[in-house]
Image (cartoon, rainbow, N blue to C red; front, side, top):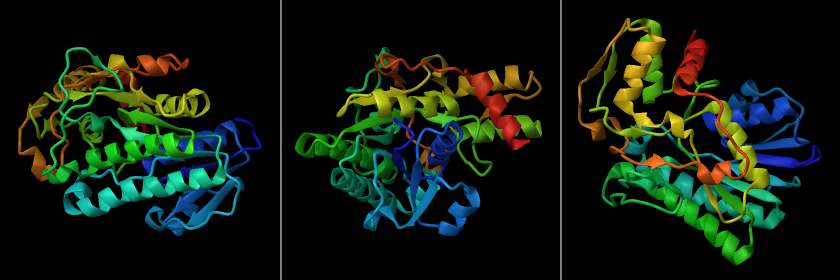
Length: 317
């Protein structure tokens, strides 16, 4: 990527998108960053840089963007668990229709490269003792309301493959593990933030599940470098897991690690094991993702879980 390139990033006011935007600004890797946004006021409060171009729109009805676009990173999606339960249709429409519209834009602009940011949740209930490669998928319930997110992500991935096969849109897929660390927002409701806040508040870590679900994790900075690597070095029509394999462990193991090493044994872990569906939690997972394919592009992770939690705690404080 040269400095005269224009990059369009969707979801620029969200967690993943903002990490990417701020990294691109800091590293000065492009000429302009084009941000399609619903809430212009919120976006302008977040960014004050002459490289940023705001386009007020929503991805379900993407308007014509007049600017030249060389690269696209599409990471806009509703990710809050409660919204998946309360507004499943809107979640599905945003992911599927939004992705199709972005692919249409990519086709029209004849871009050089595009990355679609997908999720580890597309693996469903795949159980494996071995590290999971990108072409191994498990079952996802068609009747569960919570399936609106992972099933829509699968459909969006499928659209990416179709647009390559029919129109040769040079799209790659980054299938992210759970990302946290530097840049995480204080209002994030996911388990890692609950654990981090327990450390800060010096309270016991309370898990609302058995804690036996396998978690795949990646530090914020490592995710950013992975997406950039896939954008510039990845092969079109290919999928890459983005995960630090050394950070893969069960949720309860992670909580115990934090209680022992980060909180220095001053708090403990309690499992209440409530009904997960009520809270919109993802179904219990047992899969461990492989990052071998991504490492083949020259990418390497840099932070372990303990460092990631120390980064979150620094952000909270």
